[in-house]
Image (cartoon, rainbow, N blue to C red; front, side, top):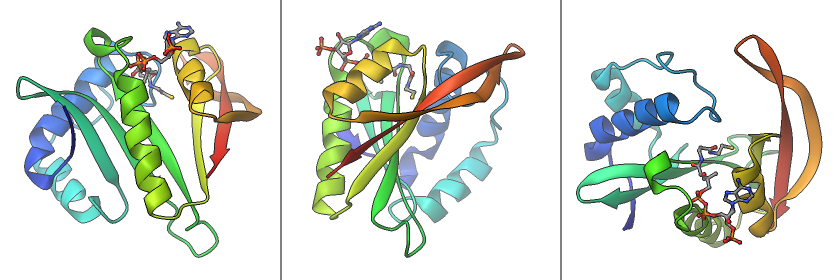
Length: 163
Ligand SMILES: CC(C)(COP(=O)(O)OP(=O)(O)OC[C@H]1O[C@@H](n2cnc3c(N)ncnc32)[C@H](O)[C@@H]1OP(=O)(O)O)[C@@H](O)C(=O)NCCC(=O)NCCS
């Protein structure tokens, strides 16, 4: 089921993020790069949750296996928009869960009267680009050599959707 993350989930959330770093090669952190300090993570989450971060998770048999995170702009000139980050463990990909999590985030953003959603995605991440296009995001440009992976430059698309 999809449900909103709470502060009580901090340890499980950290485990999910560490597993995503390990098992997917298409998110921001390299394996082993994220701090595994559960206390720090809980503190940061407590400060941010439901103000600067809104998170929904896919929970199955008591385990978190995916998330979608909405990060609203914090300034007057950016408060009309939000960034979206999504990730599912490989065991839970290609089952329509990404689509459902995106719908949850988009619905929330519409209710909150955000006018624009945006995200970045590695250009070779075909599954993600396909999902975002399906959710009516457009490719607005290519950020060349935006990231490096194994010492090689990786381009990203900036994608956006107006609500
Ligand atoms: C990207 C991601 C969130 C997609 O979630 P998902 O649950 O696997 O996607 P869904 O099952 O909802 O399918 C989304 C669509 O993409 C399509 N798709 C899946 N893999 C694809 C591929 N390699 N190429 C093209 N389309 C693909 C699916 O067919 C589906 O379209 P359809 O409904 O018309 O059949 C998920 O794969 C993931 O978490 N990947 C690892 C982390 C990541 O890359 N996150 C995004 C960083 S920007």
